[in-house]
Length: 174
Image (cartoon, rainbow, N blue to C red; front, side):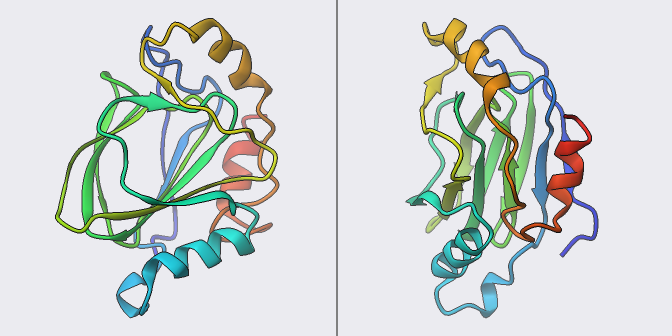
């Protein structure tokens, strides 16, 4: 795994609020999915063990820009790869590979632009959040802008628990 996670900050672009205080965090090669018989289960077990097992799901990433205003989200690539745009139309296009994990603070836009056959993603949320989905430019934007700063910081890193880099990166912004 990369020793230092990658971080990205995105400004509100008028349609996607993003998060004004917390960066998107990407851990490259975080999980050795090639060694796992069932990489989806390996990611689920890891997220659950570290307090990010609320609302676990298996699927892909939606093909339109969307964000969550009431919770943070983690996305683990179990199989395949996907080109994902984070941060809305003015954001960053990032190639996510099997074994990569992204941690999105509330408000961060994300959209799958392309993927390989067999893409499998595991997602989860910290226990403190409530799940919602807004599309970019949603009529509920005013509510989303009120919700985002109210989302509590997670108590743990989805990969490393109480000692993970996420806690330092996000608490420094607190």
